[in-house]
Length: 131
Image: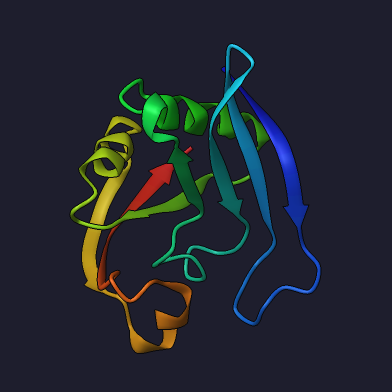
């Protein structure tokens, strides 16, 4: 598996956004998904998390998101990051737990943060990952 930087975005960001990197996740030269790392403080990413990942449906079940997060550690200069997931997203929850992240709390997304989320996202489980 390898991560390949696809894009680094730090210009003309909407209000409330921090610079972020988008990585492609490759297994045997096949892209299986993407991982996003958002720069910023723990407070800035308390609800959306520093790391987001998506594995294409046909490649799910192989722990690729977990492995990609481990690879991402080599690129980070952070010692702690926030990881979040919807309480119903059991696959993401398992990935976060496998990483050994510590559960902080489950919180309703405040109205001041709503613009960053879909209307279906109401609350987030919040974890801290010591890297």
